Amino acid sequence: MLRYTLKRFLSLVLSLAVASIVIFIVIEIAPGDPASFMLGMNAQPETLAALRSELGLDVPKVQRYLAWVSGMLTGDFGTSYTYRTPVIDMISDRLWVSLPLALYALVLSTLVAFPAGIFAASRRGRAGDIGVMGATQLGVAVPNFWFAMMLVLIFAINLRWFAAGGFVGWDKGFFAGLHALTLPAIALALPQAAILARVMRSSLLDVLGEDFMRTARAKGLTERQALWRHGLRNALIPVLTIIGLQFSFLLAGSIIIEQVFYLPGLGRLVFQSISARDLIVVESVVMLLVFSVILVNFLVDLAYAAVDPRLRSRS
Image (cartoon, rainbow, N blue to C red):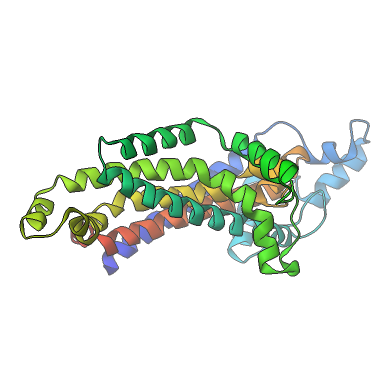
């Protein structure tokens, strides 16, 4: 297990190094100059040069990259060009919205998808299976921002059970914050639950046809007992992959939902920073999100080994 873990950790480090280079290059070659954007089109060359020097934009790009990476390793993400505040403080404030939102959506997605996938697999070809697969097909086809607008229309405008947008803050209480994130979490969770339910069903159907399942039933176990005791555990590996990818997507890809519900999260921060050409914020937030994706994949690999010991012996 130690060798397997070290190999995966080395892969994580290399992936982060490559990702940092790609992110820096892509953002640096984007058109537009932050100093020119901040001062306007009629800025004097001397003023523009002074601001570029103050922001550190006049040093070679390699030096800027090394300073950026070394700063992140020590927890210093630099200072925002626009707000003149430490980037790490801005990220910390927004992370307390995006991270709970992603976790909330993932929990809702899993709670819906697992029973739906197991129910469909246990009734293959029957009305229950057809109904679940039809619902999941709709969930995959419809974009989450449409779900978000429908949820606002029904539960915020008509029923008035939830606010249409905004976030009250965790200082108002845990349940008040959770209440404010419920509609966005549902909008994010529904398409992901549809995907996860289909994967759960397919994985279980593959397992149910294996020899060890027939042996379990031949020993006297009912279909339900064989499913829960032997089938579910062996069907979890592809499901864990999807769950890991979904968490990464929910954390990094919620920019549209945060815009719809006017949530002060990381997605909205990236959108505002791109509009303001605040490159240091964009680089740092994107790198943090990439790190979360790679870290989750690393943890999923370790979960593979815990679920299926055969993977450890192959490494």
